[in-house]
Image (cartoon, rainbow, N blue to C red; front, side):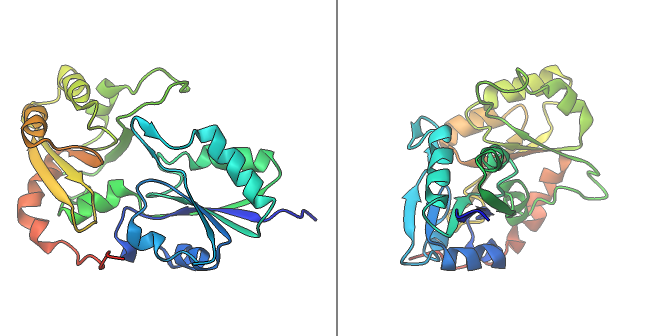
Length: 257
């Protein structure tokens, strides 16, 4: 029998506390240690057991508070000291969240670990903006892709040309900083410059905002509006439904603490 505690990789969802799973909430309420990411909303952090040790391991572009290897070492250390350790990650741990990497390292270290899925922003942000990712009149396929590729990847680059021809709806995570390059690659691949594009910033939160344009105009619109990260990009004809459905946005849970 091992004496160490257990690490739970919990997906916090995209921000609206109403979208946190019941299992995730229960774990936060009984956790001994919570190591959380930068994009976890204050309302969700407020659910954490007041007696728990809370550690900010947030990583934002150019402002890393902890390196990835240090986070994993910290989780191992805390699992050897406490019974319930929650690694609280924005969105879903296994969708561009490095949850798989952390889980591998924990298993290798002999630490018991479990993943608790969360609602990923690539689904939730478009939904709250009135953009269905599939629709019988518009799209029967969706591709989720990162617009921010890390060093040391298993392959050199995203094949944007293949993506341009492989799906009717493209959802891009962390793509704002590389948006010029991405749009040029998609147009070079033959995608029409009039293809609708929507950016959803701070999706599902009270401060959510959208910017809608086309593949040919969106970069200039971003610059003019000073529209920054964090944002999800949606590309495809489903974006045209935004003007019809945006008024049906779900009621967001109160997020003040």
